[in-house]
Length: 300
Image (cartoon, rainbow, N blue to C red; front, side, top):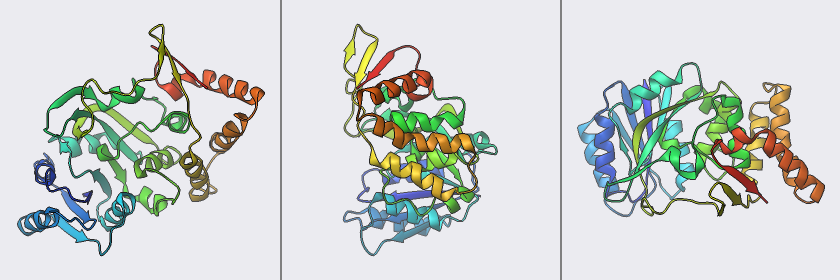
């Protein structure tokens, strides 16, 4: 069975549309677990209405506001299925969302699909999630995905993921120093049984503050040279250290070296020679970090 874990907070505007899209899946062996984080609008009343109509829906209301990460963690812990699919409160799922992920995951810990972007009114923005933030293609070898996340940015959306419950036994509780639960889950999966990505669009992901002309851009020179300042990200260091702790005794030498290198990389930035070594490192791992061969990126 698949469990759908949904975290809600003041989502009355879109929650019906999302619940309907989940209930309309072309596979039916699933439950929906919803944790509401003390909504002050009509979200809880809507959830109670759906729970009374559909036995597969279980709703829980927090006694105090936990925040989105802790609320998602609570929802995941309450799931009873062998697999857990994460759901935002304002997206719309394609009817084959769960079927596609179940067919993709194989023996991996996580499967993830692509999403097309919509605005607050549900209008298509003419872009897929894989096209924004310079994700032109994903590293085919999941062991290289952490390089993309550690030295660039996160590229996989939790709301399009299916997670093996056994991974959550290791990944939870969420480390306190992380920014996003889906980034943490992606990385620890890559150091465990692996991560599988399908380019098939399975979600309509709502971007309330974005339209087709407001995409992320790096400063550009000559049309193909892009510049970016990559700041120190304490949460990435937290992720690396937490992986070593949670998977102690299960990591091979190459994996440990990859995790240890992140702190070395940040220390290198304090000297000119260190910056040169980082430049060489990025060049040698260019395809994994920037996931594109059509443009040239320079960081300083």
